[in-house]
Length: 427
Image 1 (cartoon, rainbow, N blue to C red):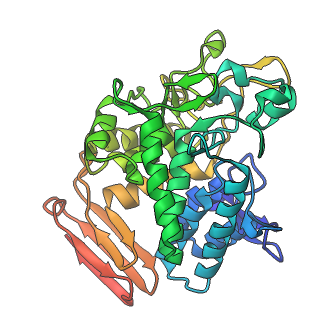
Image 2: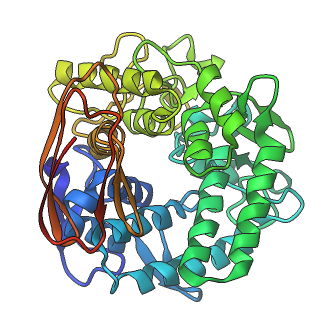
């Protein structure tokens, strides 16, 4: 995480300040990375850097100040930004979070909301490469954003960017954004929209036979592949009820080196290996799945922690993507400017791979559940770990030392949001 702190100026930043770059091969933040890294750990461990990064991906237009970057899953910014507020209590920043959320929802409702489907159009969360999509979305470039430029007008969506696809992970993000908009504004309309979208996600995407959520639908068909983020967000955001959560964790297929971003890979990649955005293991997605699983299936959570630990130690760092069978860094295959490129890079020192690991340690193993009133601590005995010590964890006005002993894994503790000074906890 520290490796990727660099000076940057964009968005609402007035000068170059420290931000979190996306990884060792990237020279900018990305909106979803900014949100996910803040949510994972950076908002707690590097609050000023996280705040700068959130500011760097905002924009301003006729809708006012709103979320910028790749459009379809941009609303994940609200989830990350709200977590930043929970971690820091930065009340001066909260009005901006509320403003950008309200303006962004208005913008995306005007451009990407499909009244007939009752869903938001757009690719899957993080899925900017066409290796994440069926053959009908393959274009001459390697990115899904190029698709509308290469198809007849009648194949495009009638408004907005033009991609006529509905995905489970992206719609889960919109549902959570509506929920947080209601929390921040008190406007009952957002609560109503949250409940309606939640119900529609379950109507459209839930696969009763497979016991998981299907990946995507459009006018030409349904993709019943298993998307790691879609299953994870459905659990973490309570889109799924308790029965569905249990079935997801029972039925998800996991490779030897962790849950794949999308499973299985698309057949067109098999002669070359595995698709970059389908069939490979992305550690940040592992971390979300581990987090979703920890309370109901700690064995699932432990497996993701163990495999990522092993793969990171082998490489001496956290890469962007790993091979599902070998565990080695592997960028996968994907089309680029026409021909297939079988050996895309797996970027070294990937930020959200590292912060995803911290997510598993802080929120799952140590069991830090941070809410409006403080930190509820419920350690999870996973991965055969006997003891745990966290020292010097800064939370608002407090500095927390936490020790969990072999007999303390079923114990609980609480640190109120207004705690100040040194707080020492032994369970």
